Length: 173
Ligand SMILES: CC(C)(COP(=O)(O)OP(=O)(O)OC[C@H]1O[C@@H](n2cnc3c(N)ncnc32)[C@H](O)[C@@H]1OP(=O)(O)O)[C@@H](O)C(=O)NCCC(=O)NCCS
Image (cartoon, rainbow, N blue to C red; front, side, top):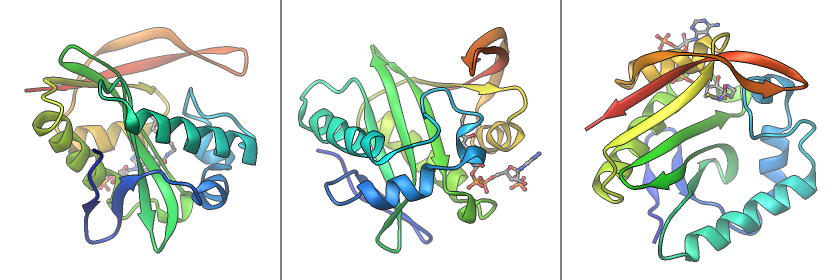
């Protein structure tokens, strides 16, 4: 069971059928995708449909290996945040937000809520994220959320045929 978590500016909730259009509209941006490894650009309706269907099937699984929340604002998918590679007591954290909502503290709040969910519901003890060294906004979100840098991963991410350095951030309990 994936919870619905309400906050002042947004709601964290499971992806559901009907989200495809607003998801595609919010995520299909060069600025949103340039610092992410798993999100394709352009992001088509086919990608959107596959993402929603994949998550609905993940939610049904008893053993959770990946949990993704939609960030809902005004009935639309304005962003996403999730945990993947859940194994043992650890998982990787990833997130994105539609550009028009940047700079209001939304992702910092969302990271806090998902961290709480990971610790209390999934009983995880370590969350980590790898951030392109040029992605200052994401690094700041993690720092504000109590994540610490554990090192620089040289030539770690491959994107568009190029290799990029990343910072490894983690928060442990
Ligand atoms: C990273 C992202 C999720 C941040 O979302 P957000 O809701 O705007 O984040 P918040 O408002 O909670 O915090 C952003 C912080 O970064 C700071 N920031 C933004 N751009 C910055 C820059 N270029 N240099 C330094 N700091 C920057 C903001 O000032 C703010 O810090 P502050 O509260 O100390 O002022 C959003 O920019 C995004 O979706 N980016 C594209 C996808 C992505 O990079 N995902 C993460 C992959 S690891």
